[in-house]
Image 1: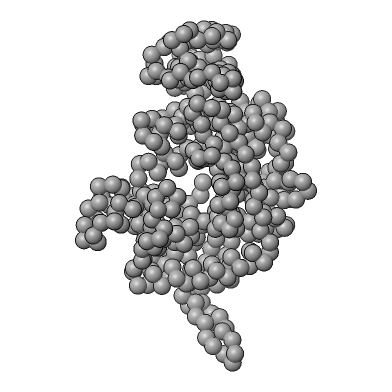
Image 2 (image 1 turned 60 degrees about the horizontal axis):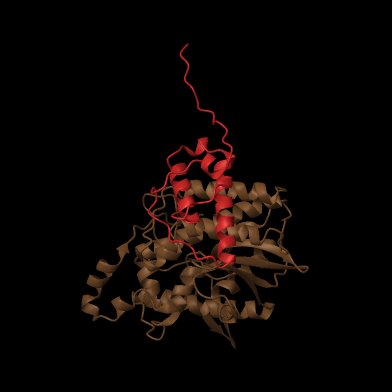
Length: 85
Length: 334
């Protein structure tokens, strides 16, 4: 998974990722979308356990991230198509 | 039986009265803590925005763990059960916006909810407490209970010879005890009810001491016995502390109830319910002014500290009067 840069925290990653998910139809979410949420939180927890101070999250939407930014392979979700007879 | 206008939910009150016949640990707890608190919340339906943050957080936390436990009991792997529980949690909370500058919102918001659920599920990946499987094959997770007591409101007792004898109830409605058990588990060859709690405060002896004696836990131990039809040793308090800088903390404590303690609780309950009926008949719920500073201070303390003539002004400015269908109702299904 891509590491956040110095200006970004895990919480920033998570908030931005959630904001991206919220903008999509939940029916179009893929497994990796949820894996990202879980993995970011696990890393956030590991940092807390290691005593690394949590950076306060910025306002949602301040960073734009994609799944590939986070090191996940993205499968193209199927979109329903209307076909005229 | 009376329905709440505009809904398909039964009223917990006898028709045309404030006499409550369906009780849960929450409404009973308010009554025991302070009859005026009970009046404001249960009878009149005053609520606050901050309260809804706690309710939503608790409800989503419970639902996510419930989904995970059910999936695990059905044979799913930790990874698959967790994935589905988190996916549903993210989906359910899309529209949940919390003001994180408030004391409640700082600790209880969508992010901290996701954090603590993921941490909880990882922490109890190999849970020593196994979900009890009922005779019908269903996992004993999120069990709603509702059972009748052998007496009801408006019953009469008459003195015959040397003892009191219950006369037939005039209206035939017995009291009901209602609620939800988070989970029934088998732990060290004994059955326990498990109750999930989230807290901002430190979870130690002081935290667990509050559950013995405790109205909610005794009711749950009693209900577990009725619902499972087997002896329940007590309740496991499954506590999670929400921490912002450090990792969330999870601890479990046990509180036991003997059959004699359950009987005593029921004896006490009959006195409390008679008292509640008397308050309703007199349309007056007295203030227990020794409880105002308990549990971090009553939410209505500012109202009750004012002169009676101006209290309604403070109630209206600090609280919202919920519609009958929005109010706390032990008969409302989850």
